[in-house]
Image 1 (cartoon, rainbow, N blue to C red):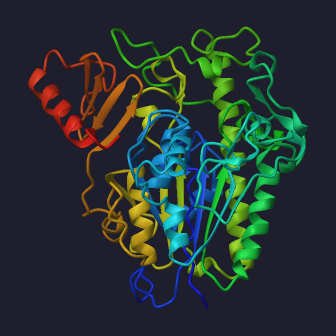
Image 2 (image 1 turned 120 degrees about the horizontal axis):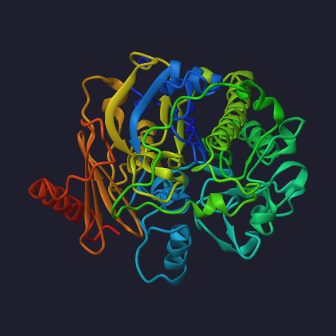
Length: 475
């Protein structure tokens, strides 16, 4: 039987007799990405969250408790996942890369799927893997002449269905409702019906069809599958909201807008939707309702993951599968008075990463080693036994997979248009473009609410120089 690697990125992977990547037969890859997914899961310690499928995966794999993305926005974060390199700060990062390839002004290293493709794999993408679902540009994101990731995919698919086109699907609600003016679309919704009435249902149907096709192919495959929920608007079938109705939620830590200069913002992406003239920063009851609808969307996304894992069982592939679950960034649910991402606080930058494969040492163990999205590319290349991709800027996570308690991690770097940041074991420093710095001590109960930069100038400057050394010339 052929061996398979499956990468679940959303944002999953034993001892096989021989090390992963050392087997004589080729491995396949399944990559599943989840949009706007906080570590808001049972396997990350949130008892009230219904995420049985992801939790089951975690129980037989490795949970990375301190995984950080390179940017708190979809496009820039996915750029790093798919290239293994630092990049631009905005959602158009991959389109800028595509333009550089088209114009041939400089040599552009191959993307993650391109590297697998160059080494004999069939590569397929379904859903939101790069920033635009389906990977195309144009006004409705369906222009066949404008590819987001040229030379990467044999098939790059998005079944728009009732939502008309990829742009409509991306921000769709039940039964084909698409966003025109956001103020006319409800920020949250839960309609009666099956999974198919919201965008991720038909998307998963297509991913299952592709998995069936690829399982029968003689070539190894790299299948990437992107789930859009819990991205705004928070819409999911009503059955996923039921477990959360009336549930008492834990207190939101440090919910107030921070004092002084920070990367705080006014939650414009959230606030532009119809909120029935309610503000979650001023209305605790409404804030908790928003959190419940977010949780419902997490459970809806979890159900799609379960459908894929069930199909692996049906195809007899579960024992030969490496699975990686990845969230593209975090999402504030009221922390620091923010409802969204786009900040350089912990809540925007920390996201789930789970890796599972048969025979993993200490299945279900969590590693506290600090890692980055930058590391996913070299990890998959290592595990699959492909030629080393010496152009990437991350490192393989094999040590954490084999020795979760002993392996050491590394500092995590991230960036946004407002500044750059480093997260170490104890501290976070945020360096603004105008020289202003924020220094936070995670050993202090105050966490990222008390700026120590003026009190600890030498430490702040030391960390700032580490940011400069790491990121200078890399972006």
